[in-house]
Image 1 (tube, rainbow, N blue to C red):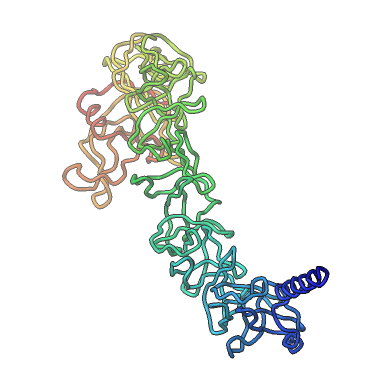
Image 2: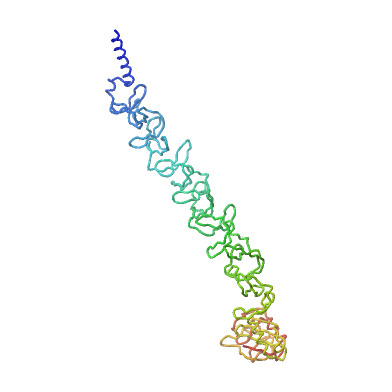
Length: 493
């Protein structure tokens, strides 16, 4: 009796076990092939009659509807997802592939761009659609949405992509593999040349692109300030220095040429004289200013302070320079370039030519108390007052002597007759003529032949191009005409 009960219980348990493991009847399983079958309340995928727990997109008929279906662990899963089989990735809507769909879909990790229900892994560029609930132009690379910052192209231009989508509010610099670009309202502005800012600084833009080859100065607006900005490899350098560019030397202060600056500035061991922000590299002058804390008159040569000892000139005269600045304490003689100069309070009173004329004059006698010397080589006239070995310089003028073919004669002469003017009536007129010898005269430069010396025809001085006479500025010729009497000694050499 006990053995029979035990046998019955074992048979019952075995039946239950088989029913759990194999929910269908053997007679039904025998009719299944490959496809979808509704078993135990779910649509399941069978392959060659065997229930297969795969995760894939499979072909079959569900509720009388043929199609491709998304199964997870062998069971139809009615969700919207991009799922994969051996033929690619497919957009499944409520578990079924939608071959009419064009747009974006997501698998467990990424968003993919789909065409006709299938992910287009060859898609690259910008595509309109909805991702994470946001409709925009999204950046796609090899079919996948890339949530990056870049610059990408579509049929209407190149656009700034921010966090994966075109940002139409973006104005600034955005980069891609081809370079960095200036975007205005999201679009690359290829017409723009100037400056723009990004998180790493200010950059020079040429035709919409950061010009990393540009080095130098460029005029534009940076941080609201218009000026010429110092750029190295396309980036504004907010430095203070002297910059060489296109033949100019400019003082750059915090990145921009300081056009309001006038004075001396020392950089890298050299002190430059700056005018309106720039160095005049051709300038040779004596200029007042402060150098290294010392205010003085400094010798500037080719735009920079030269710490030499020499003679140099400005509009106020010629000066004795010691160690780069005027030495106002010096009075005496100084030999420079083989010539002897007399200096008083730092200023040259007489130059070498003038000194030579004064020295030469001492050996001559004139019966009138005046003596005139003419230096043809240097085109100079000197009037002296006094007597032999006691002549003092009175005037020192530029003149014109005779040209090579009509040289002014050399020798000792005396002043003769005087003429108020002379000259061909239809050509020119010379005023305040004082005879030296024959038809060689002191007289004015050439004027128009009218009744008064108004219009100068030839006013050149300091060169030899006369017909033999000694031409002077009209006021100097008049002084001789008015003050030098006949018989005054004239020495021409």
